[in-house]
Image (tube, rainbow, N blue to C red; front, top):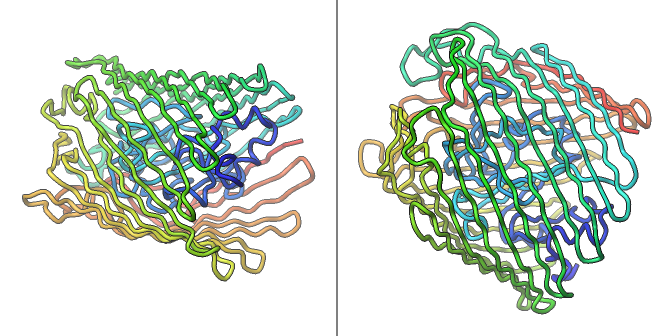
Length: 609
């Protein structure tokens, strides 16, 4: 594939051949450059999870999908639907930019997207790009970017239905369809899930600020209804419009006070419209306008409290100009506005961020390069300029080397600054510099990668022992990531090993300590085999120790789990899957005081004519 074809803007592909969109994206990534690029030529470490991967391993949550990926550590506070945090390459949980269909999702008041409420039924594809992405996407991309693409329509009319039942009285039903012709397409997905859950937290610590500090020996249920719509029309050979909506609302019970009946009613909704037009053979424009909402009303023993609802308005305007077959220049403008509505008295309830960005992708001989520069004007914290420089070289036909340097920043959240119960109005923005060098190759039928990286964060915002945010002068995170994929005896294997040293470098008693909730080692091995109408897939995951406090006095032990999925194709239209998770009933914590699930199973029947 020539560089010119490889860098066509994302939404231009449906204009060329909408019905083969999924096939054309196979082996390509969008998030790394805001344009379509071959994954093997990307100058950023990246991972792509497809719809086939999700169904092959019968993943049930986004946490399951991401946890086994290199550089990823997840922390969960007591099961499905409970607060879930993503630590990418050792950075903070709000240092990963979460996007859907090219636009930013809303975050809660503390700057984190509610990953636990994103329903996998609605997802067609997930791209994870590691390393600083601020030069492309602005603040909050110190660790990287996760982009979710909702399900895409296929030619003709394609309905599907699935029903599931499992442990903890888990019930899940999903219905969807897609339809497309040469000029129009629509995909609609709807799902409902209910589970009685298990006891999220048993209050065994008896210490304030550890776990839930409450003894409520009950199951903590979760109920949610998810909807996804994606529809578009190609008006001319060069112009198309697409709309999308992704929402999930429901209730989640939790242990977190001395009262009983604690429950949060939530709504997560992102919707938008994108216009894509090719002005000339070498110049195309993509414009998107979206709104994201993250709302939660919490009830303590029947008393409702609205801590904060957040709304994000987002607009982006991007020009892609193919200067010649070897050079693609992109220039654009981003605008985002965050607004908070709360029963609490926030001193500031809104702020906006305006940015201009530019990027040059090119090739000189055997060398590929990327130069990106961005200037953000934050209403509260002024102007910040970030950049990224990366280069790659094909040393041999089966061996490639790449290196990158990037800067990033993240402004304190409105909750960090003004939340009435634990905030710090004197916080400074976080700034980072990152370097990475990597190798990718194929030898002895093994596709492998090796990456070394270092990220330095100045003025990192962490929570002290009373959950009050504070800047620490410096943190340095070093890591090694190794991956390998191969096929042996008709079995597909996929392994990853991450070794990480997330170190607090600030002066004081905690200097040299491990940053909280980051596992220093993770390993996963996935295997899949099909034989006739049957299939079996397994995921072994091992996590090293982590600490739950800055002083490193609360150690969370290492653990390992094994999940197994058995599949059977009943006939051409019906299939069944039995997922058994945590097969050896390992007991572990990823957040101090909160329980993990024991061995549990889920049986699913799927109809897809």
